[in-house]
Image 1 (tube, rainbow, N blue to C red):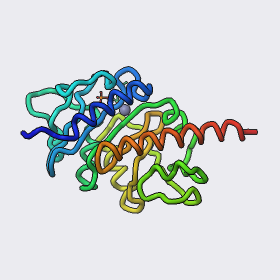
Image 2 (cartoon, rainbow, N blue to C red; image 1 turned 135 degrees about the horizontal axis):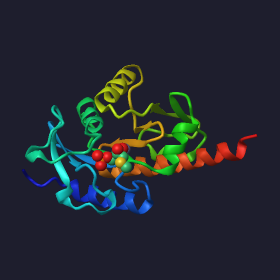
Image 3 (cartoon, rainbow, N blue to C red; image 1 turned 30 degrees about the horizontal axis):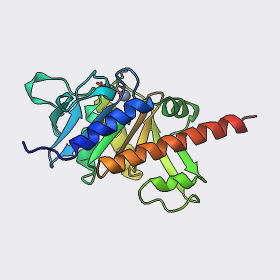
Image 4 (cartoon, helix red, strand yellow; image 1 turned 180 degrees about the horizontal axis):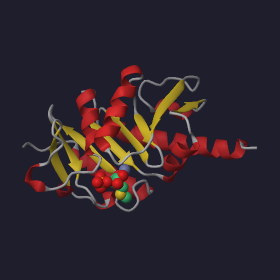
Length: 204
Ligand SMILES: CSC[C@@H](O)[C@@H](O)C(=O)COP(=O)(O)O
Ligand SMILES: [Zn+2]
């Protein structure tokens, strides 16, 4: 296998995520696409803030399995679903920040709608604070294949963009490459913090 040029950028992103406190304990998982049929994804149970290149496993998108018996992330099925359905996806970041965990519970509907924030323009294709950014929220589940099917069903009428929230769990976001996924993560986290504070201050 030739060296994946995105892996260095992904490792740096994982360390940055760790420093931000967005993947406490062993929470979170991260991956990059490796050609048409594979991705490199974090091994399950690792501290994502102190990963090395050896902590990434080559997984087939079709099977979700890694050779050699090592266990890829428990949430591999969500990453492989994104790479399979959206060929332009080059990197996926899943994090467990306090803001994404809390906001996905406070918002009881099936989507978080963000509007009126200049930082919406950190998301590719967004050009105005006047537009709406809709981040779907799916109820958390330990049954990842079933969860992936629910997300696919929802995406049939509302195509996924940027990211989705898992209720009480965290954010999964992505981009064409690691740099874009990282920008989406930072932009969304900023927006989540603003929205949470706005709701707190405006609560009667
Ligand atoms: C604190 S563990 C939470 C896990 O169940 C899961 O949600 C997670 O993000 C990390 O799982 P992993 O299997 O290490 O990729
Ligand atoms: Zn998780």
